[in-house]
Image 1 (cartoon, rainbow, N blue to C red):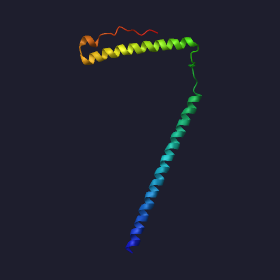
Image 2 (cartoon, rainbow, N blue to C red):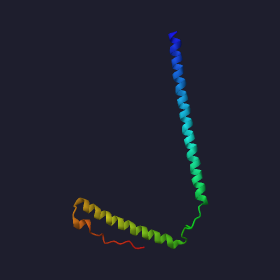
Image 3 (cartoon, rainbow, N blue to C red):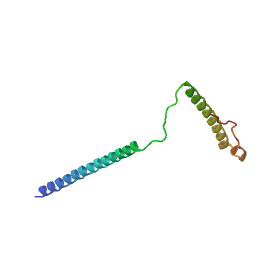
Amino acid sequence: MLAVLIGGLFTFLFGGMMLILFFGARGIEEEFDARAREIQKVRADAARTPRFIVVSQPTGPRSDRLDEAFLCQVQQYLEAEQLLADEFVLQPSMERLYRESGRRLRH
């Protein structure tokens, strides 16, 4: 009799755990579906929104050279500023804090 009771208890516990697992997985799937529907709705609204700014890629080799030259200037400027920041961290003073690197960004 005791064995039947213990067997019934374990069956009840196993069945309960399986139900918890099933409903938990179902809730996660419903959450994913709701999120997917929300994303589709946002994309559909964005497609209907009028666009006033037209973005186009610059054409011609001139823009590439100009971009590379500007990126080189930005890199040199950042390196000079980083050098000043490192000097300030090693030896902090008001003079080092407000000192300029001498480089200006020009485009």
